[in-house]
Length: 394
Length: 113
Image (cartoon, rainbow over all chains, first blue to last red; front, side):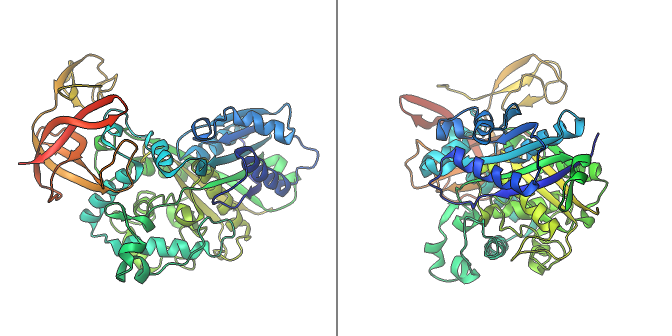
């Protein structure tokens, strides 16, 4: 297998956008291609990550549309759908193409334009990932699966709503330094939990989870250019290697899992990614975790191996996961505040890590970061992709 | 799907009961199953009150739960209990759980014992 490097990255600001789906993916792709400064070198393949264009935007075969927008003929083109883990799955597909030698340069772009749907439709679109007969018909939504997971986890490990609020406050604060974030609004413990107004400011979504425990519904796109090690060495700019990718799956119906509080697919994905990279969790300097719900940042930080089981909330409380702490988590603001255009999220995590490892994350930089780690969580944890990046010396 | 009972799948080879059913047994890989009604008592493993509702629901909130039956089988359904708690004992019933246009869906509900 050949080494694969990230030659360029780019993304558009997440949030509510008037641009079309094609405009979004094209804009992010152009930024990544310009960042890569490929010169005369052709793009061999395009992989687009997307979950809902067919349903929400009435557009299909969007990878081919992107080749046309950017005049990349005769580049190969595929769209990858893996729920909210589509982004990292697309990165994996691009990685495989370069690592195998089938391609030297692959553009990977994640895109979602969810605000085209109303809230009810957007919730139903995401809920359609759940098991049709054993979950969906009961009115199960992703927030309700997260609510049930949160209650079981909190009861077992002594996590409180205050811990969940600490995740939200940290990630909102981090996003203040990220110009690409959907939400740029500092929040306080008083405002979302302790004051009489908190009941109004922070209504329940799926108890014990409230509004500020949940990511927003966003439009957005993010893009990276993957190249072979050989091509990367011929280009200028810093070298960031895709050092490891791991993936794991778990049961479709959440109730079938061995333990209601265990994220087994995260454990497997992380172990495989670390194994491939030849690194251990304590060698990671910065992590982007899939905090679609605050409880997930805590639970994933344990399942990935950064903290012991039931100790993630204690590390959070100590400030270990803040920028400047032992392992900063979600310096970008995470899904909680950067936003969660589902197909774009996994790619945006890699874009953020690349910026961090290149020392270009102005306003939220983790000092001296050389190794980064991401978890992209599909379904409610039934398909998870973990990625390890490493800064290389020239 | 309009049913009077919700069924799990018992593997004819090893006897493992799965819900929902799969095409191959999670335990032994067997591919022949007997349908078996889900019916009985158990405990609430976890629950939520969902306020951001799915389409088709017009209540203020929907109380959902995962229950572990005494047989060890776990199921998801609607919890009809005004004082829910983790560990509380409930029994299953089957009733209308969703109306979607003309379609009426029947499924599992849990009531306190």
